Image (cartoon, rainbow, N blue to C red; front, side):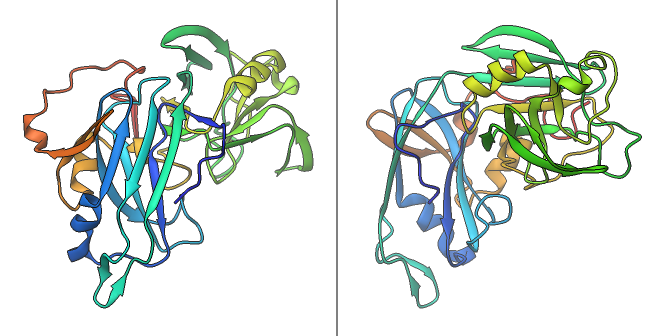
Length: 296
């Protein structure tokens, strides 16, 4: 399991991610899902989904993720208990331990970056906090320099990060918050302040003024949604934590039980997703719809 750091809050988009050292056979996956109990101080609905380890658990064989239907409510306390010990994972292969973990969702921090509009809308604590001028990836810098569409999650941050690209090597870049494995960050770019708000000149990152980048860096935690819209380039699955590329129907199809999970303070139950009310919200505060993967 991806271990939650003691005292570390997580963003409203953060899935529960369980990294498995051996793949679970298709016939055994539903039983594994049913062995896991989730508690959430604020009731939520979500589902388990199976995927390869790429993008989430590099040293593992497979990942089991729990993604909520909509973002976690801020300040939610979450825990889960996976009663796996002795459970068969494949023919003749058994789990040898149970898993337990808990974490807390921090303040809601959501960034929406318009590639063609050259600005970032920052929502903090469920309100529009600011609209910042930015500069995203140029279309003239060669293959893959555009910032690709998709709803990503912040992964990690450092101040500075040593960056290498076309024409530069190990340049310290300050207030850097990573959202793809391939090297896209929200970061301070004093050299492009003149282009921010009008022209895309980066090699894939989102350039911000030093003051705005410092604010974002100081408030960001892993799991904060970063949605890129109106880009000519489609995002790549597993280039980062990309669970929010998927629609709710796609998440349900990736589950072995094809059942939703309703979690609350006393535990969780599996329910028929057809009994859920239709989701009509298009607010970026609730989820990426309709501005997620390939959104235009």
